[in-house]
Image (cartoon, rainbow, N blue to C red):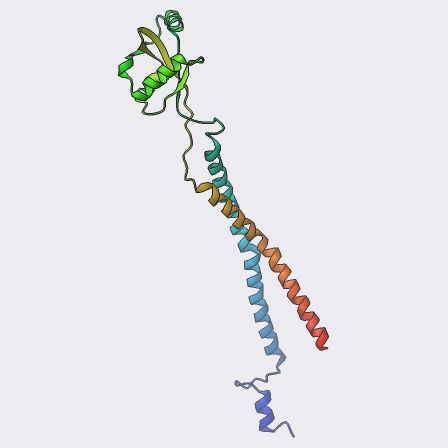
Length: 213
């Protein structure tokens, strides 16, 4: 059979007249596949770790804030405002030592809110003279500057000893932060896992070729 045989030309030539065994065509096809594989490899190499790093950063911020909000009250790091009530004797000494000082605002016991009255009464009977104001604190600004309260026929100096308020956040912030950190770790581990899978695939392909050879 000669090269002019139309059956042989139909077998060896493509639709556009280019021989199917043309090395130039095979090289272009191989280059195209290599470019596509390179782009996919770059996306898997740099994309997931970048997103994973962002997720870890966000998760750490949310986890720290959420965890602190969860344990702050148990550790005594925050709470309701605490007032300290001086004894009548200490109040007399304080006012006598500062005769030209600023005028302190005076309140009758009945002028205070229920929460303020409970705090003053509790502080009077407390050995340390302190109590928390659990409720509406209408005269907070006056107590911050120091005020005089008439209680049981005696004048007592009252001021705020602690004003550390508890941080209020969404209860889901802590678990969401943990989940975000775990997802970030998975994203960072994608490139080495991907490279491992590629190596295993290449090794399997070489084994098949050796068996066929």
